[in-house]
Image (cartoon, rainbow, N blue to C red; front, side):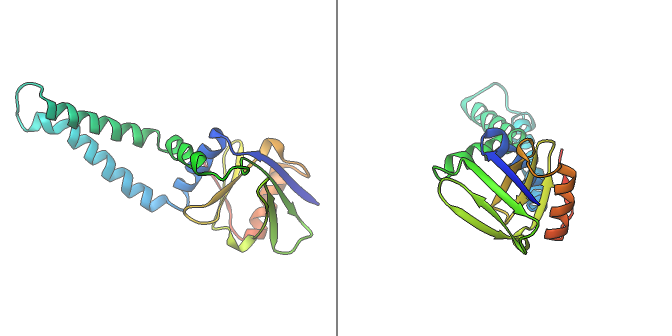
Length: 175
């Protein structure tokens, strides 16, 4: 049996991928960064009031603007990371076809217009699942996304069981 996916790496797919990476392999680092970011943003917003300075001057406007930018970055982190990833993608890798052959021993194949690559299941650090995608984390900086809407060769439930068995990792649901 063969499971196949045809995935387009668009903004939606890349946002799901960024979210899954943040909530799995980057979880601790992300949590620390968020705590620090919210503290700095809150201090930036509140500092002019704490300093007991009257009136609004250029320094306060710059401070509030920087704090607002930081809050927006924290709130839209996954979309921002997806945008950056899209800009850094190699031309021709926007569409990928992946094949997971149940007969093949320890690898799966991903093919784009740029080339064909075999990945060992042992290279998968984590597997996450959103409502629409399966996401494989291969490192803290590299992941692959597979669109469930294009899954052929079986059901999402069957693929989830298959991939958990092959990678030795449970599939983490991410909402």
